[in-house]
Image (cartoon, rainbow, N blue to C red; front, side):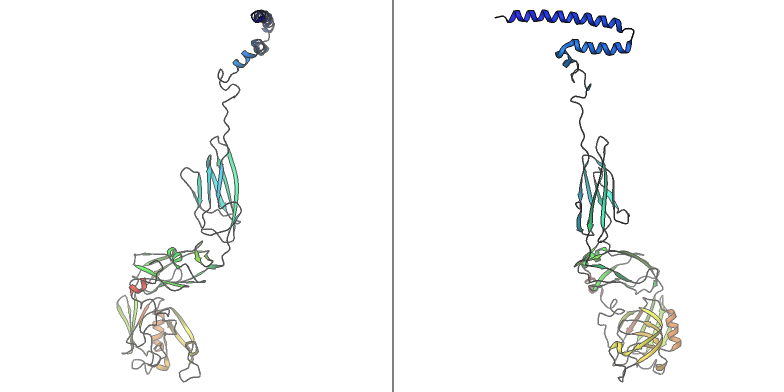
Length: 429
């Protein structure tokens, strides 16, 4: 059939060719011994050629010499991938949103969130450092950039930037606060917060308000309307108490498109325990400080037609001179009961027009009858003394008057509500 013979002749030819190549290798080796470096390269080259195709493949197999050419051993590590929230170029993001970034295939080397002012927003990494979340609230109508650097297991860094824009509120929630920061006030001073916009989400706002004091007291918030909330202790503040109020409203949704955009903190101190009792029947005003009686003044309270409001008042403000106009309380100036008078040494005890003030025109009635339009009339000397003695938040309690508190006037409303009723005014009940 011819195959064995053909194979035999082929083998003889291959053997003869191999002997010729080996002779050539030996000859060249003798020549190259005088050039060692070239000898190494030449021998390697010739040996490879001499081994033939099948032998060459075996010599450079990844199994025979692992990793010699990198075949089958080099693994490409993909770069870190990032997921952003809010998504890149998102708009109308809520001010209470938390920006987040998650890394897959590696760890976060750095994260920086900042607005146009360049001020970084506070945030925190998770424990494996594969995630980051912002903590601080966001500013309104602001474009933020989130710059991230991540590193994969091979140490290769990847950088990426995302951006988003926050919403523009329909209105911003501002606050006016009573008392003032650093003020020393009386034991009856409530904390009052007066909002610039109606608050639809009262619970969200009240939840953020924090009152702390040394010593600690039991106290609570009470809403009077959607723009006014007060805080008072169950009983009068102890003298010497240091009080701090935090109003962290930045990024708080007050409802109906209104957002808080500013945080505030105030501190105040409680002064001496000033309590004055006005007895409309005995026409006397007793003034005490820390339980000690300092003065007993003859006075004249509101006449039967215009009685002074009964109950507990606290002093709202002092003014050396006030122009009192009966029109402001609904009494025409030109009526028999009208007045338009410059009055001195005034201590306001309600927003309904009630003061303790100097009234030289009624000195003859002071101590014997009630002739005023609702104010507490004193002589000039006594009114001057009381003016200098008084501090905002002092207690002035009126007893014996037929006019009961209507529950709304600032200065009379806070301490005339029973504690159980006061607690019902909280949005967190």
